[in-house]
Length: 567
Ligand code: F6P
Image: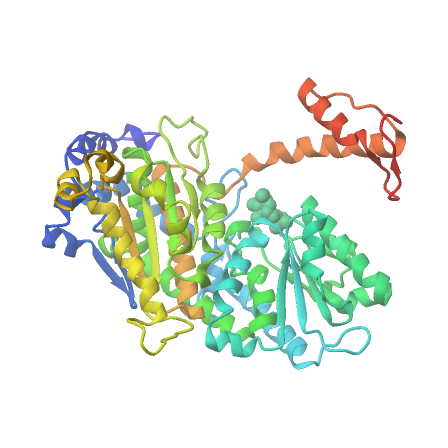
C-alpha cells in the first residue's frame, strides 16, 4: 500500500493526537519524581549530555514519537541525504553539508561524483592562503601585512561564521592564534553598518572577503562595491587584487566583479546557504582569524555528530531526540516558539544563527509535494545568553506564555575566574542559574507553598507559578572549537529531523523571494524620483504615501538637499 501523502494521515500521528489528552493530565512536578523515567531521558555522546526529562513526555510518548519517525521514513530520509539524493526537490539539489566536514578518505556522491576530493581541494587552498596572509607572505598593495579581515555577506553567508567567531573569541587556544588580528562582518546594506565595519581600519592592512553563494544578493553586492571603492579610492584600482577575495558558487560573476578567480574559494549548489558555515563561507574568514588548525577542530566536532546522527539508534540519537521533541511541542502540544538559552556569553550569536537555520528551513506551509499542511510546522526561535535573558524576557516564560526552552551550558568556562572570598567561582555562579531555571519552570510554585511562606493573600495570584513548562538541558564538556562544531551539527540535524517528520522541504527558501522582487520595483522608483524627478506611481495608496513622504526632503545623490515641495 502506498504511504499517505501527509504524515498527519498516518495512524501513528493520530495516535499521538489522542495521546495529547493523557499528557494534559500530567504535571512535570510528578513526572520528575519518576527516577526511572528521568534516567531513560538522559543521553550522552562524547561527553555531551542531553537531559530531556523536563519535556512534557512519558516513556509512552517517546515510544509513539519513535513510531511516528518510522511512519515518516526518517531513517530512509537521513540515508538519502547522506547518499546525495536530490532531496531538495524544488531546486533539484542534493543536500550535502555533511560532505563539507567529511574525512579526506570518505566517499560521498552527488550526481555520481565523489564530492569529498573537491571539498578538500578547497580546504587545502584555504589552509595555504590563510597561512600566507597570517605569516605575511601575502601582503597588501603597499607592502604591508594584512592583519584585519572584513567578511561581507548576509544570511547564511554571515550568521554561521559570526556565531563561530563569537564562540571562539575567548577560547584560550583560538585567542592565542588570533592575537593582533581582527575579523569583522558587514551584512546589512544600511550604510551605518558599512561605517561600523570599517571604523578605524586601514585599507592598507585590510583584506575583504566577499561571501555570497549566488554573487547576486543585492545587499552583499552593494556592500562589496562600497568596500571595493573604499580600497581603490585609497590605494588605487590595482590594489583590489591584493585586498579582495571571494567565496561563491558563481565563479564567473566573481571574475566579472574584478576579483581574480585564483583568489576565489568555491563551494557547491548542494550546500544550502544556511548550512554553509563549514564550507569556505565560514572556513576562510575563520581560518584567516584563528588559523586553519583551529577551524579544522571545529569541522571535526561537526563530523563527530554527523557520524552519531547517521548511526546511533533513535533512542540515543541526540539530533533525532531533540528534533522529535520539537515536533511534539510545536504540532501536538501547540507551543509555537522555542527559546535558545545558552549559559555562555561565547554563544551570544548562537540564537540568531539558529533563527535563520530553523525558520528559513522549516517555515513552510506546504508539504514537499506541494499539499497545504493541515497542521502547524516550523518554530519561532529566539534567545539570549543566560543570565541576560533572565533579566529580560524570562518573566513571560515563567508566568506568561509556555515556551519550551533549550538550556545550553558548559562544564568548563573558557575564561575561569575565582575571586578569593567569594562563595563560588564566576562560572559556578552563572551555572547555578543554568541548573535552577529548568526546575523553576517545571515545578513552579503553587498557592499552598506561598501560604506556607506567609505571602499575603492579595499577592498569591501574582506570585503563583503554574510550572509544567517544558525545557531540555544540554551540558557540553567545554566550548572549544570541537565542541562548537558539535553544537552546530546537533542543531543542523535537529532541524532536518523536524522537516523530515513534518514531510516538508527544509532546504529551499521560496518565501524570501516576493519581498526581494517588490524591493526591485521600489528601487526603480527611488532612482526615477531622485534622478529624473518622476512622481511616485504604480503603488497602493499606503506605499505611495510613505514613499512620497520619504522623498519629500529631496536628497540628490550628489548630496544636495533640495527644500520641501521642489519636486
Ligand atoms: O535570505 C535568502 C538567502 O537566499 C539565504 O538563504 C542566504 O543565506 C542569503 O540569502 C544570502 O545569499 P547569498 O549567499 O547567495 O548571498
